[in-house]
Image (cartoon, rainbow, N blue to C red; front, side, top):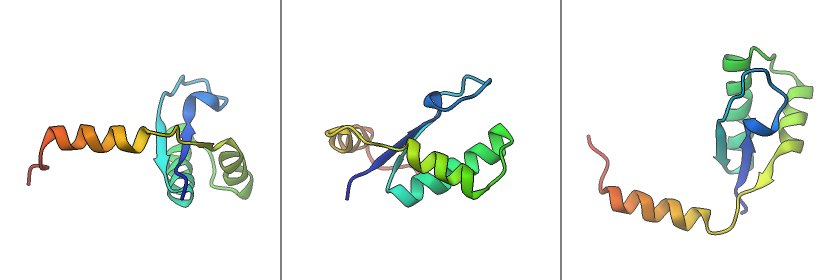
Length: 79
C-alpha cells in the first residue's frame, strides 16, 4: 500500500507550522486531525477531514528505504 504524506506547510495557516506526517492513509488523517485540533485550534469536523484527505500526497518513492537505513544506523532503541 502506498504511504501518504500530510504537510502542514501546504495548508493555510498563520503559524508557519512545518510538521509533516507520513504513514498509511488512515493513520495520517487521524494524526493530522489531532494535530489540527490541538495545535491550530480547528474543530474535528467532516469538512476538516475532507480537506486533509484531499491534501494528502503520495510519499516520494525511496523514502521508506531511507528511513529504514537511518534507523538501522542508530542501533536499537534505548529501553
